[in-house]
Length: 73
Image (cartoon, rainbow, N blue to C red):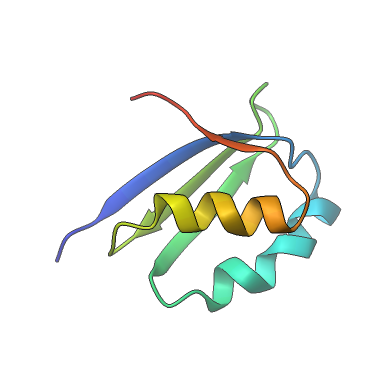
């Protein structure tokens, strides 16, 4: 099984903001795990998937009004 890990800079800066995006990420068929690190200055969104879905992740976040940019490796 192929596992991809995606890391993004976001403006998702609190648990209440995570609550607004949680149903979309939890229901996504290719996302196996995800988290947001509020302690990091970049509010890092980390997504584990079994498919190539980088653009989908960005689109989901942007549809909910968040900024979301891939961080370099």
